[in-house]
Amino acid sequence: MKVDPKEILQNNSRDVALNKLGRSIAEWMADVGLYRTCLNCCDWNDKTEICMKYKSRPPAKVIVSGCDSHTDIPF
Image 1: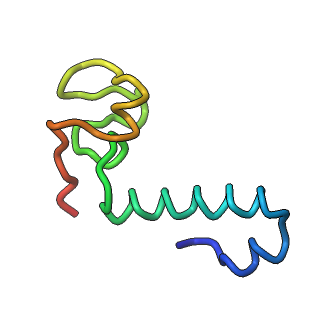
Image 2 (image 1 turned 60 degrees about the horizontal axis):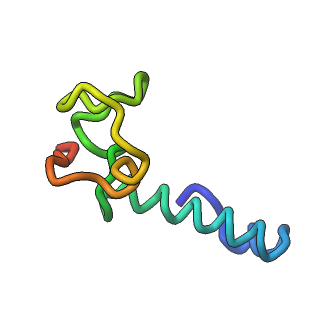
């Protein structure tokens, strides 16, 4: 994780701290492949935000939770 949880908890209100920690944990989980989203799929194009396999932008629910055709990035 790129953030120091202790610093976040000491320097923010509870709501702000929970929001920042939650976002950091979710980003870390996606980065290390603990869950599958469009953002960590080989077919996702970051620039256009389009799934190259289906040539379209998936609905938000699919972007967040991934799909059955998810292809892991091999590195």
